[in-house]
Image (cartoon, rainbow, N blue to C red; front, side, top):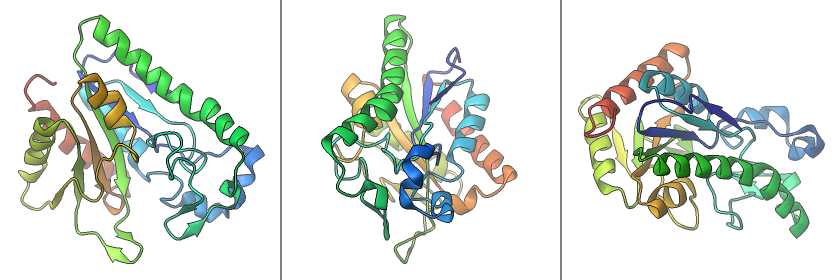
Length: 241
């Protein structure tokens, strides 16, 4: 995992759980072809670059995962059906079939726990220092999923933090050219999500995920445009930046 700008002044704490498509060599790419590791099934395309630029614009701390979500997903509770997915979208993951309990425990200990523990210690320290924190996960989504076209340009996902969700939605929807999903294209669920329920809601901290459609993050200027749009919206939120 990588931590960026831990001393940043912003109350926003950025987390990019699907930042990397890296799979250590000993796993043999989980039996997948190189082209599969460039697909959305392996990581959130464009999300890491967007998160890094947003961190710089906001002066916000950022935590990025260092491994593919196919190895173990850092935004899924351990033991959930999609924590170590045997299949992703329409693709079978050969290296995730019929895993032993020891192998599952090994991946959790080596790749999942260090990432989550680092974030938890950071949030603990901020709380002890009397510093407010607002959790924002940075993600991207495919324009087509299993043959279905997605019309949203972006989405805001939240559970308990309805006020934060409403303000983020209002900020993005101030641009009439954008179609912004309210808990779309996904929804936060206790058995399917980790960042918002654990690092946010369970601590009583406002928490949400931002999703941007991947075809809108295809170039450096695209990423810059979205980073500035998101930063401008966040800077207008009361008590934030």
